[in-house]
Length: 174
Image (cartoon, rainbow, N blue to C red; front, side, top):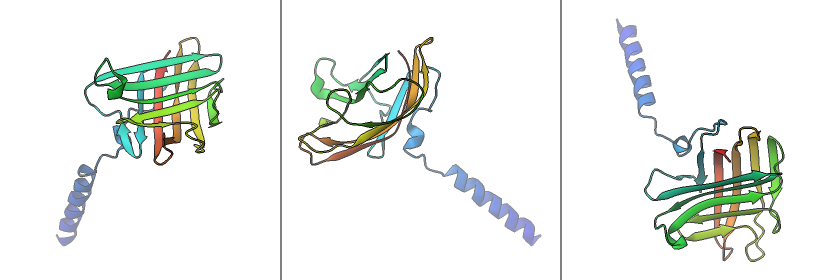
């Protein structure tokens, strides 16, 4: 009888620990799909973005001849850029599915983030911003689908604050 009580107690604690598991920030992101689901998400300094919130969500996706441009923004006032958040990147180095290690250059690659009117971008006041990592899981020119993941870090305009963009994922029709 005693072993049965211990077993029931263990099962109860196991069920409670599974039930009480906190959702991580990464769990709040859309799934990493490759079907043209028109999804986008990332972690900004460890916090899921974009979160379910009001505003006008806008995406711009362009791909042609190696040039990929993705811009996802949220406007809270449709008439002014000052009330907008975004994550945006452009590179001309994407030619097939695979992993891309992209050092920031001024002429071909541009990465930017506006996080509550804190602007972060490549090439700020001579501050070395490093590089981006982009993995293209699907580049389908027949169905116009581009999907993948990304990670990068940037500094603010003054070069004093850094933002880490991680666990990024996108799955768009272009």
